[in-house]
Image (cartoon, rainbow, N blue to C red; front, side, top):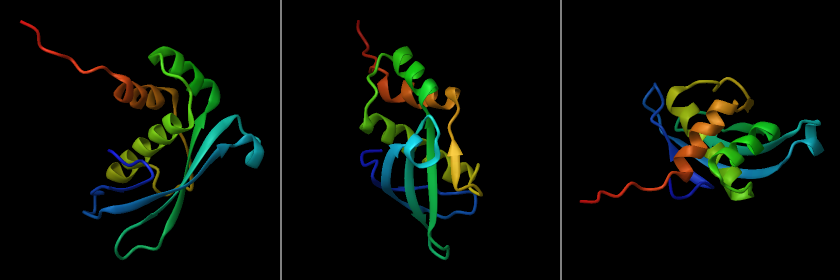
Length: 124
């Protein structure tokens, strides 16, 4: 994925491709008294009404994962983690009935490792 702000995800189990557009990102303590970073998207597919999805990244887990993969916590990194999870949600249709989805530490670690892994070079 090259653009984490506006992208297509899918196909979902029903063969639809969804348009995903980033709306905002903020610390959730200011909006719902949660120690997390919330990332909001608007998603749509042909024949479907637009939907809002908010992906929450729990701050204690996020900080631990950033330390584990040796990557600084930043807005772009949070956006990438949440976008990858939303793309997974769409392709699997897991949690698509929810407006707010909170990522688990193993999910955060999985996506963070994928974003930070160094390319392997073959040497002879």
